Image 1: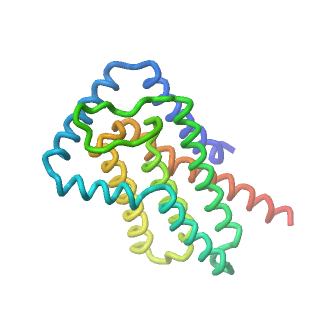
Image 2: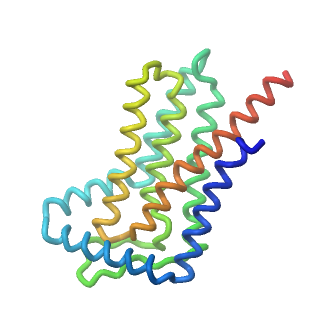
Length: 217
């Protein structure tokens, strides 16, 4: 029972603590956030080519493109369903990603943290800041796709490569948001936890339901 419950509990607890610290305006957390943003945007401002690369990354990893690509993998997986991948696995992956997408919007309006204010901004973004949507959605899509195709990755090298690629894309997206000055480090850190955490939590639920269904049939 506890093995099934701990992933959602851990994600909820971590997110709640972070949201409380931000809404309570804990000085140490806010001061560190502001200092990192100032240093990151100063670096970006001094390196125009780096800034252009960040803007390209920002556009490529918009939610609609990230989830569009991941949905394509779900569709391919569903078409290939059989003895290796169950068809319901693809449906789970798609629904789990949509859940994270919606949850991210909900959390933004609960916390209502304003975007970083930079004197000479290198980029602008609408809406609230916590958590980072780009980061949470990229990390969620990467995690869902890895779990979805895991049965097809037969070697340790292939599985390690998939995890490394997913982690790299997620972390680079988080850094992109900070260096553009549109998210604080705590925003992207929350995204890196919420995205994969909710996917793993939903997968535990999916596996529990699947096991119960098989036992009763």
